[in-house]
Length: 58
Image (cartoon, rainbow, N blue to C red; front, top):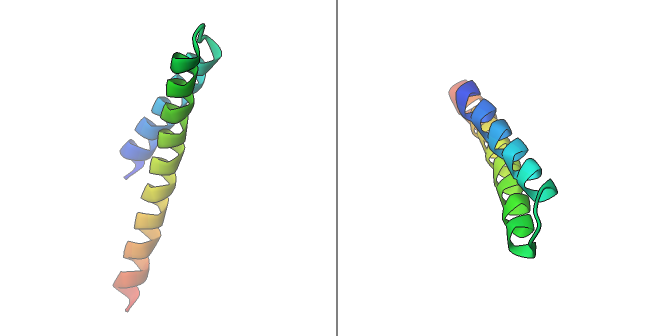
């Protein structure tokens, strides 16, 4: 799980760099979408981890 979380953090950072360096609106929006995907994927990984922990207790 930690590898996917680290990978999503890298993807989010690449998205922010792409949005910051964008000269066109489409690349700017793509960078923001990539950032949003990286953040949401990391949060989904955290949720999955705690859901699995909770299921193991019951």
